[in-house]
Length: 267
Image 1: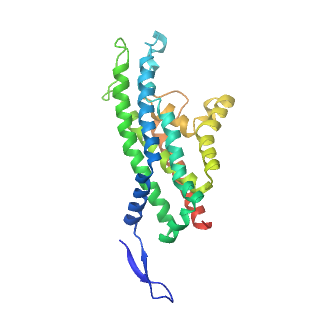
Image 2: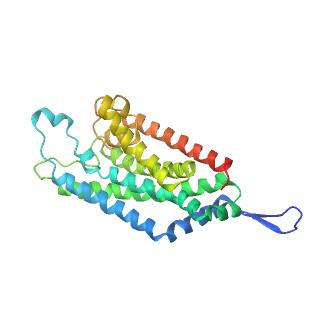
Image 3: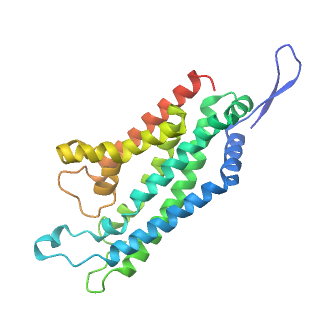
């Protein structure tokens, strides 16, 4: 709840906002940006479309590959697109305020800077988590319907399938929080997006080409595609729970770094 205190020497009530009030402010900002909702619609349409197309083109495995055949991993291929769009939105939620100068107004209204970033991360991360879980389930159901009837359809009751769908949605929620942290850490839109793309795509791709999965398996995109979104463990990759734990560590470290920079530097 907000409290009123007298500004030193002025005798003017100064409002101190609580977390609930700051959450409401950030929610108003988010829902008022039409471009954000169009971008999220792109995530919805893109993930479902990629899942359907991938499953429609999935062929029955040969006898020697039947043991590792994992259509669940195929149907969740759209997570790669989703993380990029969601990551860019998360970055812009912070860097957009710096570029427009509105961050000064935000911090003048809410001097407790960690509270501001916590509200941004909570609102965008929460919206993304709920939306991503819904998309993951819709994608799974739509993709399964597009699978060749001659191929056994995966079911949510099969071992590892429900976990893979849930973790794929949760992964996008973590990316949302991580992107907010990157935005606060870097502050400049182009540079922050560059860091995001480098972390998610460029660096792991280069490492995969140079060293195989030895190092690349520890990067977010590799974890998402080869550990979280699989119903059958893949050799030489992290286990689903180990991968998810590492993603939590990444998110916490990036977010904490963003908070530190936000507190220490002028707006």
